[in-house]
Image (cartoon, rainbow, N blue to C red; front, top):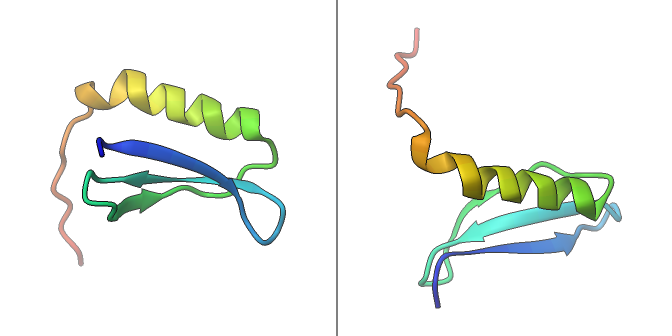
Length: 61
C-alpha cells in the first residue's frame, strides 16, 4: 500500500479525511467539513503544496 488519503463521513454526518502511511498507520486526521467537496479541495491543496512547506521548530514557554 502507498501513502493515501481516506475520505469518510463521521458520526456527525460531516466529512473528514485521514492520511495514512503505507503500513496503515494514521499519520494525521483532518478537521470536519460540511461537504465532501471542501474536504477534497483541502486534499488537493495538500497534494500540490506540501512539498514546499517549511519545517519550523517552535519553543514552548
